[in-house]
Image (cartoon, rainbow, N blue to C red; front, side, top):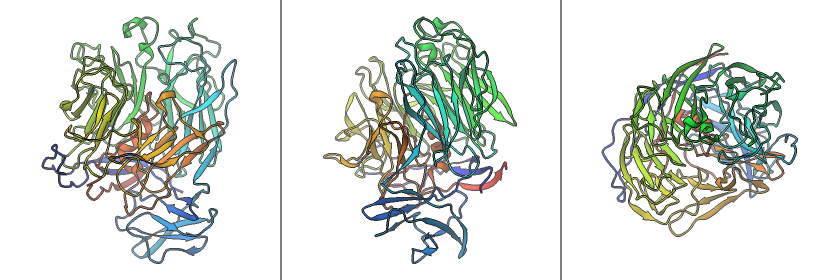
Length: 617
């Protein structure tokens, strides 16, 4: 059994590739940048067997703790099924076998086989169902399984699921109405419910109210769950936080009075371990931009390695006018505030940082110092809570931070704008806020995506709702815009990413998209946003899984690719930026995670984080 948290040194930039002919942004590459040792999860192999067409694709994790030259043997029962140790990839297609075949793998190091992996999770129908327990509804409403996150809740090396249940009468902040309570469950992959937390009537339900983080913040090997709470929240052991009888809802169903808390919950039991006042307090509702409670209750959350080594909790309020970001540490059983960034402070007022936030945030080491920054819409905050830069281009609905250009060092940033008086989309150097290119103003640009989706162009492509073209990293028009502007997923065998929208996966092509998967018996979430419960590298090799809820809310249905790959890439869970991206995916308007290294057409040898030590126990 794996215990504790691995301490890893991750590489931010992959070796570079030559500039493509259609890539005017290509430039001489700088040296790779390494980050400080980072506390990340100790994971098992995440072994899966995905049945398709009479064959089983067996795939597993290549861990940062593995030697670079590790090989693998695959066993069905006690019989080895590969002729020679597998060295160039971490998957094996076993042909003409039943979907119930039982697999394990053994790493081979220096010619010697290592311990057995756990048995493979069997995707017998091409998917795997985690049974879930739908809460009873109330007067006029029922519950739908909504956003989820992952973390090792019980320290066994397997990722578990933390699931938010959304009542059918949940509301956007712009609308009045009483809502049912928000419920948070913890499940193992086998469907065992570990605990249930009811946030209570003083936390309104909706996409902007509850942003929850699941992460091992103290390095003890088990993840914590952190979120905003209030009087009447019931933890996973049945204990009430604050005043159980308090009811601060007004006639419009809004909660604009009463105390607000931040609580750290135990991942094993759901017990509240620490509760403090939420920062910032709401204060005067009208000071946030309106007097009825829309803008005061816009919350974002994330996880960041502010010291370059250990994860901190990020909790934020406001983005239309005032913005406050608070960083917290959970260490040695104590919740302490590291810093607070407030656009209304004497240091920041009038500096152009207010009104710049998006409906999500991004986290990564944008300035190459080994520590994470918070990219908050059209501005960024440094790892120490001070101003970094602002473009003064205002609020937007979507943003993407990643390594999008293999010909330049460091990270890149693409965002869209809501204001008709601002550029509809911008491609930005996140180290200093310099705008590399922008598209013309044109009204509310509600969606935008960045990622390498086409093998015909090296580097990411970018597109958005208000732009009729697909663009490269130089801003040039290069072809047909994809059929969807939503999520992305690494699904097939090449390093080019696919389109994920609603309950389907498509492969982009210059003349049309090709359907790769349509989920069976499942539904997407969040209305027209049509997002999955969660998508990311959760199991198996480096490709990404997609989790949807079944239409009857009886299960979470996980799809994993049945396609072989010849690529051997360290599990993306051990890329620090990608892992924190999974943690904040559930925040407000969900966005896909991105890697800190370039993963796409024209990539070089993928980087290898180096395991230095282990902590906890």
